[in-house]
Image (cartoon, one colour):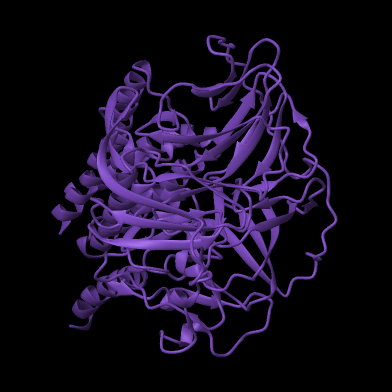
Length: 140
Length: 491
């Protein structure tokens, strides 16, 4: 059970890395698309399903991974923590869950307050670190 | 022994405490494969009287069926049009884009009628997979002709037809689009314009009349399906009405290189409009703006539809440079002059709250942070219940981080106030109202068009994510179902 706890904690780390990667991947593709004549305005963003540039999937993956997959994995980690008997394992799992919730909130608030995006990036690193430490704890 | 049992029971109990509420929320969010819209949501009678036998209690066996709500069934049509929709590869700015056509083009043909004429459109689905419909955006059609798959009709399958008949009772600029899987079909171009000119056409000062449909295909802005500028031939001194239709999911900004007049909004004429300089006109998603453009002595006027496309009205070969983009927006709350109305909008029979927020939860089984109406997620949304003849007030309150263009089918909203500041200009009639983050609006409408009407966000991606409610008249039922054999999926 401890091993599983640790693996799921590392999975959170991996998924956070995916978040960082997909965002830059999508932005790279977007800037090249704009350079080639694509125009990004609100109407284009709001019909993002129909955008076709290389890397556009990055935005979709970032959204689904961040809003659905990572929160689900955080819940799994919390449930495992009740059984795994990792020292302070429940506290670490709660920490991960709280940081995930904060991360989703910061991401959405970034649509209204630019500064929120800054903290979204920083909090990603905090979340990564806490999940990593949780995983290492389980290793003893 | 007891200690060992506790060692298992405690984690198990904690796990259940986490998982059971999540499971219940997940289960509540699932939509059956076939569902009547009458069984969706929670009846909301607002501040008005609660009527006992609501449509919610009937299941098609009593009351008036939406299929009976038609215009003059025996009257011959004045305007007859055949429209055929197809899935097709479009060419936009020299690039192939998968989309849809109506009669071979996207946008489809502009339908023109005179006020009072009966329009009959025979719609055939040539090859749109999953079915298609036509919704008459902004036209107060009878409910059976509203074109909402699963609510007022079944999606028209490939090879089948549906005939839409309605009296074009109000002059103005409107548009038609599919209301089956609309977040894909509308974005893909299954749409066109409908122009209703006043009976007798009493606008002698206008020498030209042109439709400019703004649509973004795969990230490329177009006017009438063409990237770049739309040229309209006109001579100096001419006055041309440019009917801008915003078919996208986001607000379209308009501005010009000389004073232009906003003559009509969402098909309703503005009372005594004044020429505009140094401001942008924001056209909500789904909304229309008629601009009067006077061709200057210099030869041509330029109206920007966003930064990347423009309508150039004037002599061929004259290329006015793009004007710089103004930083402020026209405030429609104070534009034009007030007009005395015979109807008193201040004493509604019923008032509803339409509060938009974002909250974590499940929609269709998917976890996330979703749009909520009055604190509830799809499908537990309010069903706004009204009686025919009532004056109905709605308080839109956008507490989310994004703009929501609110579109009520089959009715026109009269804006009374924004953020509690009363409207002071021309009567502001709208069917597509942009409610910005942090804004609230007080609007009224007269419930004189019985039926089951969608009342939703016209950012179609938001609608797909559950920003869909309905207005239900007392006793109106529907035999159609969401899902089911026709895979009706109006969003």
